[in-house]
Amino acid sequence: MWTYAAKRLVLLVGILFGVLIITFSLSRVLPGSPVEMMLGHRPTQEQIDQARAELGLDRPIVEQFVRYLTDLARGDLGVSLRTGRPVLEDLSARMMATFELTTLAVVSVVLIGIPLGVVSAVRRNTVVDHLSRTFSIAGMALPVFLIGMMLQMAFYGGLRWLPLQGRMDAEILLDHPFDRITGLYLVDTLAAGQWPAFASAVSHLVLPVATLAIASLAVVTRITRNTMVEALGEDFIRTARAYGLPRRVIHYRYALKATLIPMLTVIGLTYGFMLGGSVVVEFLFDWPGLGGYVVGAITRNDFPAVMGVTLFLSTTYLVINLVVDLLYYLVDPRLKAS
Image 1 (tube, rainbow, N blue to C red):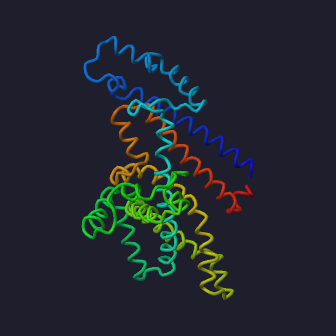
Image 2 (image 1 turned 180 degrees about the vertical axis):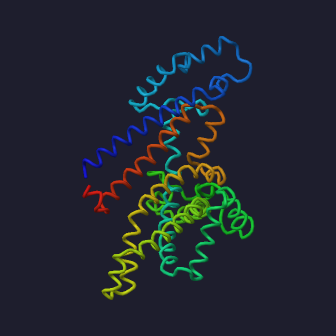
Image 3 (image 1 turned 120 degrees about the vertical axis):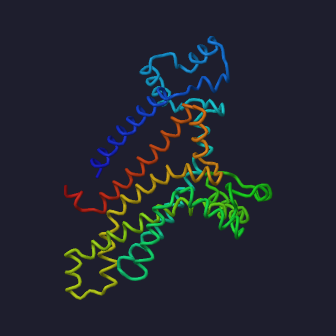
């Protein structure tokens, strides 16, 4: 296993290095300059030259990249040109909000999508299967932002059941303060015993989590259903039926086990999709995570911030896939044999 993990880790580092090269190169060749943001309109040529020298933009691109890697090795991601704070500090203040949102969405997808797909496969061509198929097609067809707007109109604009934006009501935050130990509001409010704050955090999570989860839920449900149907047609299932094993044992012990192995890869890809999709959801729900931060950085040519967010999201996605690969290795005997 350790040899397998080492090979995957080397591959991860190589991919991450490639992502850095591509992102860094694009940030230098795309239209727009961070100097314009720093100096405003109509700066003098002397001011432009001085700003370029301060940012290191007057040096060859290879030298700039080597300097960036050197700073990165020291844990320095640079200073955001928009906020004026270290990029690492900005990311630390926002990444846990994104992590809480995406993780809860993935958990929701797994807990709902896989059982729903299994039921659809077991009751193939019944009303349950047809309803599941309709939901899957609709979920995959609708854009994420449209799903979010529909949920906002229904549960905030119409029913007034759930809040529209943010992570917590301002008055609740003032009346029931808590220490932000982890940055995960659900965990921190529980640790502090602040139940009103916990309830507010839960209510603010419902709509963005649902928005982020629905599209992926449709995909996971459909893939689970198709994989389960394929497993039910395998020879080992026919053998189990010939031995007279109960249907429940055949479905949920043998077929489901065969289905869960490829689903590990799907779950890893789903997490990566949600990391990217969270940008739209966070912007729509005014969620104080990395989404709004990276949108502001891109529109203002804040290269250090863009590089920092790209590095964080890429690393997170690659680590998740490394964990999935290791789990796949543990549960799939064919990989061990090879």
